[in-house]
Image 1 (cartoon, rainbow, N blue to C red):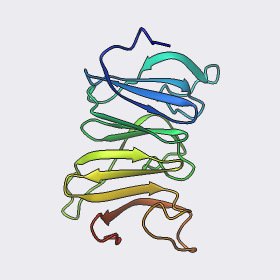
Image 2 (spheres, one colour):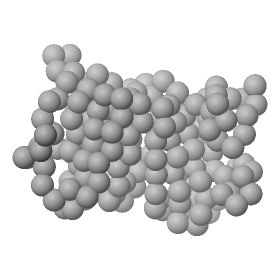
Image 3 (cartoon, rainbow, N blue to C red):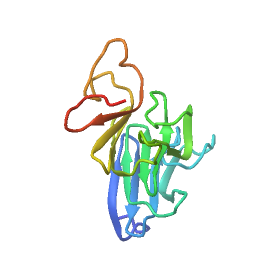
Length: 171
C-alpha cells in the first residue's frame, strides 16, 4: 500500500513493531508501536500505536541517517539521537526509557566530540562508526555482538570504542 503522506523519501528502517522513514529534506517520520518511545512521540498512556506517519522532533531539524532496533531507534543529524526502550543501555545514555529523542554523548581521548558517519541497531544493542574508522557500541553483548565475550562482563556494555582493524577494545 502506498503511503500518500510520505513523499521524496530516501531511507526506511523497520523493526519488530515500528518503522522510521527519512525524507530527502531531513525530516524523520515514525509509525507503529510507541509503547517505549520507539517513534519518539513522548509518553502517552492513551496512545501506544500510531497508524499514520508522525514527524519526530529533532534538535537540528535535518537528519541524515536512521536505524531501528527491536524497541529503540537512532537518528543521525549533527549528533546521534536515541529513543525507545533502554533496558540494556542500547540508547547509549542514562535513562530508563527514552520517550523522546536525546543525544548520545561520546568524546574522543582529546575531549572532542566524535563525528559519527554511520550507525545501525540490533535487537538490544547499537553500533556507531566514527569518521576516524572506530566502532562505538552500547547495549547488551550477551551473544558476542561487540567482538568479545566474557562471562563476567557480557550483560551490559556502555559506549565502548573499538578499532575496526584490530577488533580490540581501546578504552
